[in-house]
Amino acid sequence: MLGWATNEDGGRKPYRWKVGEEAPRRFEDKPKEFFAMKVYNYAEDRVQVLEITQKILKDTLYSYCQDPDWGDPRAYDIDIIKNGEGLETSYAMVAKPHKKMTDEQRQVCIDTKVDLTALYDSGDPFDVAEEPKPQPKPKPEPDPEPESESKPETNDPNVPF
Image (cartoon, rainbow, N blue to C red):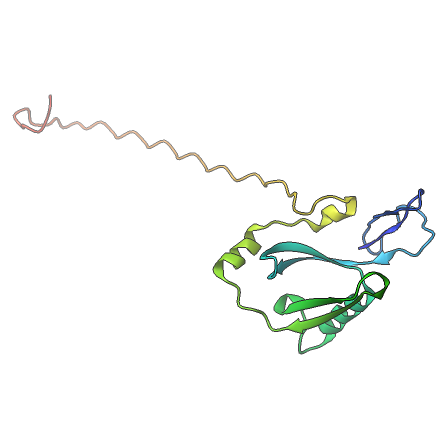
């Protein structure tokens, strides 16, 4: 995704579009590319959307992806370390082997739906409409039993007629 530019009032406003698509308008500053992904935050014990805008973090993640020892970031955990404040803020990223997730954590990841395309319209990626559940097919009516030509014995005590 690409985005973040200055609006007419001088404030920051997110404009987001897919890489390769035409920009929605002209910008004074070069728009910044950013990464957005669904993650499980162990410290917060919940699913979140991680947006990476800092060049050092994007470059580090890209390096891990290209490294045959690490590869696909879904196969390992990452820690993002923030140091300093304001203009003195710096970030670092460290790849780590996967922590063992509990069954509950794994289920939270599966059950938490995230639509990252909502970010293109500055929407909430967690505000995913429930997909309609398929209606169960009605059970077919059982075929009526054919009438029997034979009549029960009338002297049978179990026959009520």
